Length: 484
Image (cartoon, rainbow, N blue to C red; front, side, top):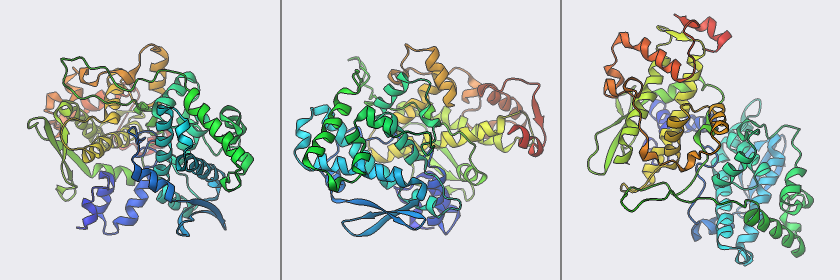
C-alpha cells in the first residue's frame, strides 16, 4: 500500500481512494473537487488565534498575479515566475478581485500601517489575510480541475468566499453570523456569485470604492500614497466600525466546572448542508469507511477507521476527549444507520424522498465527523474541543434537522435564542431506538425484521411522515419522478 494512504494531511475521504486505487493521486484530487461544497465549508477553518510571524512572512513573500492564457485564466507566482494554478475563464474577474484583496492585505501588513489600527481590528486584519491565503491554497487544485473540465466547472469554496466578500466584507464567522441575522431573507449559501445580476458597485458604496478596487483596475502597482491612504481608511471603517456589536469570544465557565469549552463562535453547520445528493462514486467512497469508538481510557477514547472492503485500518486511530464519547457513539450509530437504510431501500417500504435525503445526510455527516478527526490530529491531550462538531450537536439537539431551511425557520421562530452560546455538555438524547442505545450503538445488532422500523424512524426524523406515500421494491423508475 502506498505511504500516501497514511499521510496525516490526507482526509479519511481521500484515504478511501488511496486504499482502493493505485492511481490515488488523480482520484484524490477529483474527490477534493467534488466535495468542495461540504469538505471545506467557508468559515470552518478561519484562524482564530493570532497568525505567527512565519505565516505572515509566507504571505508577504508570495506575489501572485493573474494573466489570460487562451480560454483559461492563469495565476502566476511572480517571485518564481512559475504558474500557481489555472482557472476557468468565467472566474477571471473574481480572481482579479481576490488577488487585489490579497495584495492590499500585504501592503497593510508589510509596513507600519497596521500600527494605526486598534489591537482587535489589527488581529482581525491579520486573520482575514491569512485566511485568504489559505483559501487560495485550498482552491488551487480544484480550480485546475474545473479549468480542465468540459464544460468548465465551479469551485464552491471560491464562490462562497466571494459571496461573503460581496455582502459582508470580511470572513470571521461571528461577522457572517451577525450579517446573516440582520439579513434573514438572504441565504448566502443559495446565491450564484457568477450571476449577471450582481452589481459590484454595491460593495464599493458600502465598504468604499478604494477598498473594492475597480477604480484602480485591481492593480496595486499603480497605487499612489494618497490612494493607499484611502484604501487604509476604508479598511479601518470595515474592521473597526462596520460591526458595532458585542461578539462573545467564550462561553462563561463557572468555577466549579473543569471542562474545556470552545473559545470561538462559528457559522452554524446547517449552512453547509448539501443541496444535492452525492454522486454514486462519492457515496461509495464514503460508505467504504466505518468508524468504531472504543470505550474511554482515562480522559480520552480511541476511534478506529476501518476500510470495509479489505477489513484493514484506513488510517491511524484518533484520540478524542472522553467528554465526546456518548455524542460520538450516537453520531456514528446514526451515520451507519443512514448508510444501511440507503443500501436496503430496494428491500424496504420507504417514504418517497427518503433515499435522496438520506444520501445528503450521509455526505454531510461525513464532513462533520471528519472535522472532529482533523481537529484530533492537530492536538494532543484531552483539553480541546471541535467547534464544528459542537455546533453540529447543538443544531441536531435543538433544531432537530440540519437542512438550511430548517435552521433558518428555527431562528425566525426563536429570535431570542442564540445557538452559538449553548453549552454542548448539557445536551442529551432520550430516544433509545433512534440514538442507538437499544442496539448498543452497533448496527450489526439490528435483526433483519428491525430495519423497516428504523427506516420509518429515519423518515420521521427527516420530516417524511406520511405513511401512505411509500414505495416498496426496486425504486428505480419511481426515483426519476419523486427523487427517492
